[in-house]
Amino acid sequence: MATTGLLSAISVTAVETYTAHSGKGAPAFCAVQFNKVCQQQRRPNACFTRCLSTDIRSSVNVMHTLIAQTRKALEAELYYVALFTALSIPDMAAALESSDGRASGKRFAAWYEAWVRPRLKESRGRENPLSGEACYGFRCALLHQGRSQRTSDQYNHIMFIEPGHPNYSIHYCVVSGKALLIQLDEFVMEVLRGGELWLNSVQGTDPFEQNYSHFAKRHPHGLTPYVVGVPVVG
Image 1 (cartoon, one colour):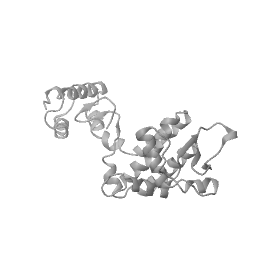
Image 2 (spheres, one colour):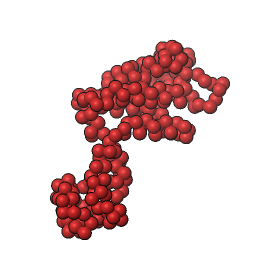
Image 3 (tube, one colour):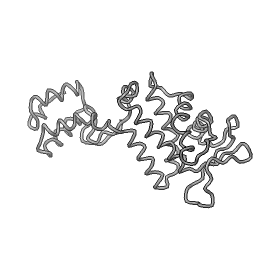
Image 4 (cartoon, helix red, strand yellow):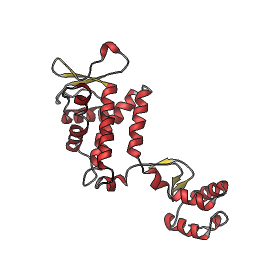
């Protein structure tokens, strides 16, 4: 990658470091944007350091951010978004703590049993009737086919009651033996609470940290050497 266009904005040392990170053949757009941002900041070396350190800073608490955004979706009454994301979290968490970094039905169920199912007993003092295996089956039907019914599972039909209706505050109520009514907001919060407890237990340990290094992250200043000056997720 040509560095001539950068020399007026940053030091030779910084150029060498940038070249080492960018490699050959990086898009010219990156160099132009990088040069423009550094000149605007009038602190080329500081700007350069900030761009290169984006990966390190943005990797902190990404799962916490996902949990926080899911909670905001719930508060904004974006119930599809909150529910679909909550059903995805056990898969991601189970993969992050696995030796090969992959998700599976068994790992989803085990993670749910350990971190989500006990939350009902904490809040309401009773056992959660929805097993990890049944929750995984529902997750597959909803996320892949958009369905809430599976005749082969523990419950033929799982329904989520929207919050805000005091006369229908029913949480994990079995109807006719094969249908399950769940309070949507409480279910989502149980998953999020389980996720927070899990994060506290695995941060700083392997294989979580090794897998987490590959987790999709938000890079507010771009991702060198591909693009600089534009927020990206990747």
